[in-house]
Image (tube, rainbow, N blue to C red; front, side, top):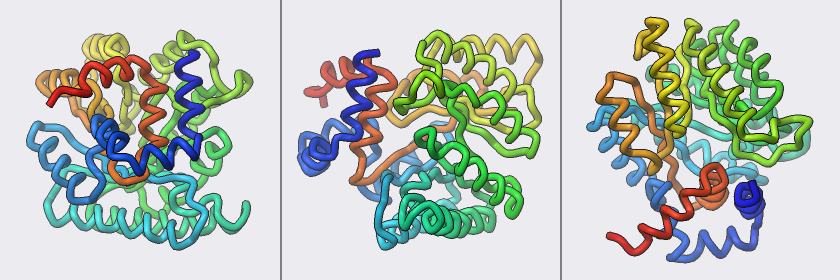
Length: 310
């Protein structure tokens, strides 16, 4: 827990972020979990993963944008990605954070309106080409606005938009029922932000138990959902649960992050399960990278062991 808190703290350290994102050493280390700095590099990674039988969700990194021009620039990248998905017939969709497209700009009324306009345009584009937009989840202050926005866009573009629920939040079981009742697709993860105990389960064992309960609910629903975990014990529990209950292996998908547990990704594909890998890219990689280390501190040792390998 100490290491987790340490890396979550670092994820919001602007001075260390600025140094890391500018340095060649920082960019080299980040490439374990980030598929390059450009759209072209992200598309190349997508083509490779598709060739291995793995679907992709593309994530242009960036968050906490405070200028409209930055929000519009982020949106343009996502439309470029959607155009590439259509043109190259990629098995891919996109994932976006609301703070990346203006949620925090201009106060509590203006920001949400800007973000909804920008994301609404993305979802309309995705619906037109038969793709999908995942509205990513951030800290707990954004939970309700994110859910409400997803619901409104789902009413306009059914099946073209979904969101993320975090198992460490006490409220998530109710949120899952709320979204499933509307047919909204959910990506279930454990959670990677620092939250107080009155909002989130402080003990890992309680988070894991809630995750297992929620994933079983999701895969037995008629809504296609993503089970986002690298925890092999939980993956094994779900494989057993699916077999025991006669659930179609393609009624849901496992979701994992680029650069993490590639061996497990390939094993699940070989067993006939759907697998989607989140492919993040871009120069603003630092907060994402630190949260990956916070989620799984063993990644620090992995990086240290492999840093000097080709």
